Image (cartoon, rainbow, N blue to C red; front, side, top):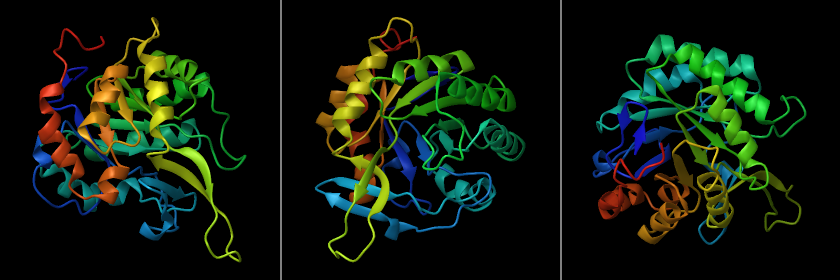
Length: 285
């Protein structure tokens, strides 16, 4: 997969990588994407905020803890870089100034340590964030691109909205993105078995997300105006799932929930699927 001047060696990538990633085989991955970080840390739940709500389906609670970009650079990045594959930092913010601030920090503190960033675009869970539309995506992408400069790779991860993802993708493309990722979490609600416990709001990932994410990839890959390569992400547990995303038009995939449920899955899939990397002439421009 070609991302600007960067070529990924394998179509399988690890997303939301554990901070203490340990094991072998990860050196075969196309890339490692960090857990999403913010400029300042957001207190909240950690692993206990992830609920397995169905077979191979997770709900990530809204009040999950988010690490700061500073802690990422100082403590976690060295561990993720030791596998020798490109590392992308996933970032999010409630507004354009926030994206600009965290991108400026990474440009100053980690420019030579990372391959680029993933701009995680999500609908705010409260009314405090800016409206999520194509203009917002374009301006957020442009703010990050301007801070990181032309050499860094900028990937924009979009929400699972098949009816609207085209417009958001065109916004990312206009803002200077090198690639798209489809998709991030699908909003959901979990009711614990304890009838006295409060419902848990959050985002679905895994098996339940895959059909929606596949549709989003299909919509993007078959749009004549969208020229960016696409990462498919959502519910990847087998080599057949990797193939499904590639058949729909993705150039590479990200494995996240599968790795959480089965540590080492991404490394295994990278060994099984390395031969599936499209030839440069076949990849989307």
